[in-house]
Length: 261
Image 1 (cartoon, rainbow, N blue to C red):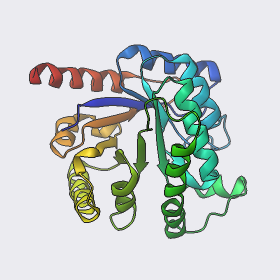
Image 2: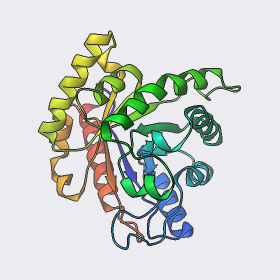
Image 3: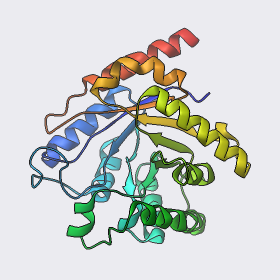
Image 4: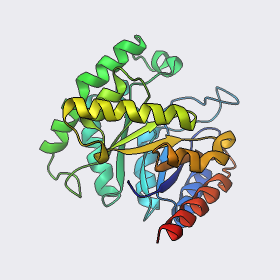
């Protein structure tokens, strides 16, 4: 089993950059394992035309103002960037962060982001086909770049729970899978992912299982662990980012580590 890890997503909506930066630094000092932002162009809650900042530009700043936590986006929409460029951006962030970058990817879903920024929205199926098409290009470009990733390879996180396509792509390319849902649902999807690994000849133990959880699920941490999920990621609201769920996750992680030791 992978080590238990915990993290948080700091969403760059309704907040000033100083507020966001302060939250990153507090997370970095907290003992958390991972810190993520998101890949949207507009807020998803509250005033939908409220303040919002870009993902990839912010990640460069996140890499500079943190020192120990692994960083990334939960998750970047494959549709918004040329796959070769995306790999180059990820590799560069890996160097800025001294090897702490996780390349989080998904097929995208928010129609407003697509339409207002001039991307073709397509369908859920067509966006998944595009992700499937682009993953080999991303992996190949990462292997061609000079210099390459700091530690030889980048952790690749793929988000989504589709059992017929998404989990097959995870089995082929990911080192981390991220899903959402109740523990029993993720236990089922973990079994499906294991089956995809068996079909393509991949060791399922090579893929860390992670989940984004919300306030109403914070009392189910042990159930997620029993379901095979070892990496739990909470959120913090905003713009007055509340890290109480993160501190609860850290205490839970440390309790399990001390019991195992």
